[in-house]
Amino acid sequence: MSEYFSEQDRQEKLKNIIKRLHQGESVHDVKKDFHKLIKNVSSEEISKMEQALLEEGFSVAEIQKLCEVHVEVFRDSLSKQKTAARLPGHPIHSFLLENKEIKQRIKQLNILLRKIKKQKQDKPLYKQFKNKFKEIKPIELHYQRKENQLFPYLEQKGFTGPSKVMWGKHNEIRKKIKQCQELLYQEVIPVVIKECSSLFAGILKMIFMEEKILFPTALKKLTERDWAEIRKGEKGIGYAWIKPGNVWDAGIVIKKDINNTRATGGETSLASQRGLTLNVGTLTQEQINLMLKALPFDVTCVDEEDKVLYYTGSEERVFPRSPAIIGRKVQNCHPQKSVHVVDQILKAFKEKKHKVAEFWMSMNERFIHIRYFPLYDLLGKYNGCT
Image (cartoon, rainbow, N blue to C red; front, side):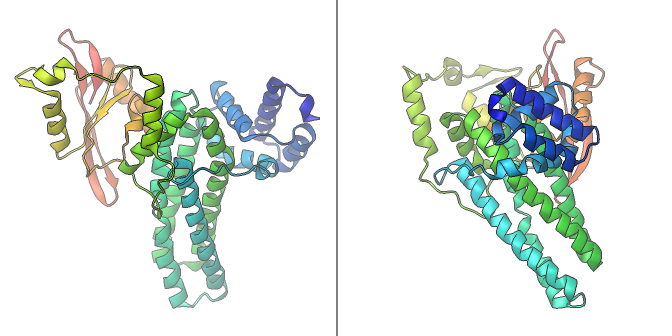
């Protein structure tokens, strides 16, 4: 029956199914109707549908709250689709390798949980589980590469859904990992079993969403040059458990693209040769770059349209950054729960209500002092912030 629907009809029917879920209908009823109306829905159609709902005014929080339910409705159809494979070295290949690693670790942890449930007083077994649990912490790097490498390129294609919704799901998992770590030291075994089981289920659902929706859609939307740029920026963040291959060579892809699209090579600007006249003194482009990289703190610069212009690429960074964020809206560089704070700061700067915004935050057992400053030209026009 579904083959008689136009693409627009299918999209409307998909959206209506999700709207019914948001209105409180049961997964069972919606899933039954879904199978009657639409079969073999593609990952791209689901991504497009969620993007359309965002554009229609559905809040990120609404979609984030029920996105796992959305996936459950479409699970049977999505499960039939093959996982997109790529050569070793391609970003998708690295993501899939990491997923394979975390699934193995979760499998081992679930086996230990079942044993602990049967033998609650077995302290050596509990200690083994507690030590094994630490092995899932590198998943943070997997999520950071998605947030700071993959999502910016999808945003450039007008596909903002993953960075808004999936980032929120990452934060739910992060919060859950932290909670489970605290519970493990309290040794309340029934609670540990319940919460850790919930965490592992959440991570596995995220893997399903990645492999059946996000990655296939990204492969259709991004060019080989995009993937090569993503690959080159990955080293600034790192990998979880794996070492990426090199069969797929980003350098060759970029070189080929340059040869195909650029008739002449770039030229060194005259300004970089003779120096730039600053407020006090003159520095070459190279000197400015070296000076900023040598600063013992992070600096990021955002323009008047809230787009990231620059960040210091020092090796010992406080926050994960990669070249993919250049040109990205600064709001998209933060999880949705804190975007309202970013907007408040920028609004105050643009209206000249504040000359500085600062606060402290705790991160990885460190206290970080963050300060934002507005940038105004000689006429007092807002030019961004740093």
